Length: 509
Ligand code: GAP
Image (cartoon, rainbow, N blue to C red; front, top):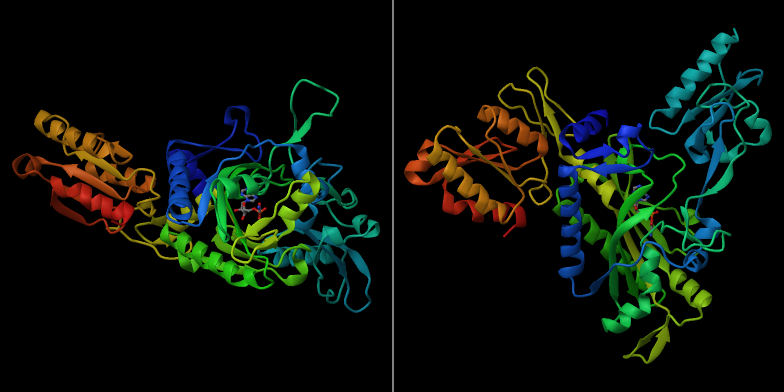
């Protein structure tokens, strides 16, 4: 993760927000390369999910809406995480991310204290090491009882008196868990008495539900059909962490796919969305061996939900949710129908029946997908030992290079143009002509600085799939060298063939 974060800053993908003021936790700014990737992600999603499907239409609803929306949806009452504070360090934790266990001697049951660790793939080992240290410090003999790790939501007041704070290691400084609502509040208009409080939306989904009738009627949509939206969402996360994986301001790409209210209709539709989403993620270059599925157990689902499966990804810090695909029944539309008094029913012409549709909700974070694509694409190779993140690696002529193997459609710069030398005007003019022509279609890069090898390396690190060199032969026969980022192979082709060649790689046709 450190390497990715460093690369993101060095090459202008992602910066810490408010960096000149020492940053602002949970917020990020996307630099020149990052903004291109984000735009590519959103454009591809919109193309494949909205424009290329006849059963989906788009929407762009406001970020701030009536607070009644969030009361009806259940967010005001229930969109919260349990948090604990450390009174000493003033640090705040999500109670379900801090794990603890009593440390006791196996034979006598004597309790020596408790250990606490932050949730991670290595937390069992960390907790055991801390428990062993406690036993040594207490100069006790005999084996310890096996540790029973639980999160802080399962700690009583008595437990809390011996659980050490993850910040200071001192016991008794953590508060009891309490619910913390994740919605950001703001005030709309000039009144200052609190009656004008409103919320920044924590998901784009509710804007879709509240517009269900507007869209269905104006688009004359027939069930099954979906409404898609891309937009910002805000959550006052207690512990934003893992870079852009969990931030306080992020973007979502969501579909609410309205289906019949037949009891079993959701099964096939839910599976179809899982398959569609999986294939789409593959199509933009996510490596399948890093992907997984996490089927939520029935007893952990919200009371109204029929099913929820996450598409997971092996991020540098572990396997975690990338996209959720939920079958939400008729819950949201019913809630809004009751709260607003406006009918949310759909009239089925064929059966002459009115009903509140059920819904399948695929929901994907743009920033989280950005991180997954970076992780998938990141490769390093070194002269002595080839290294890589999460799988395959390349080894190029014994030289060290870092490269981002983005799918050409995702790559922020599609092609770079290099004149071999800059002191030959005809050669420069030829290269400039090609650069201008290509710039009409793609985000291109022009580089005349340094040896060709160094220029290649700079582009490898930015994830540019193709570099074109204009050399002395170009002046004779109008051919150029196109160098492939991943294989480093170079092919010579007529300049006239360059655009069809790049189009095929970027768009697939
Ligand atoms: N409407 C359903 C919904 O919002 P969610 O699981 O809370 O469900 C959906 O969020 C997706 O949004 C997640 O799978 C993730 O990709 C993204 N997401 C959620 N919280 C995020 C955060 N704090 N930072 C970045 N992305 C987030």
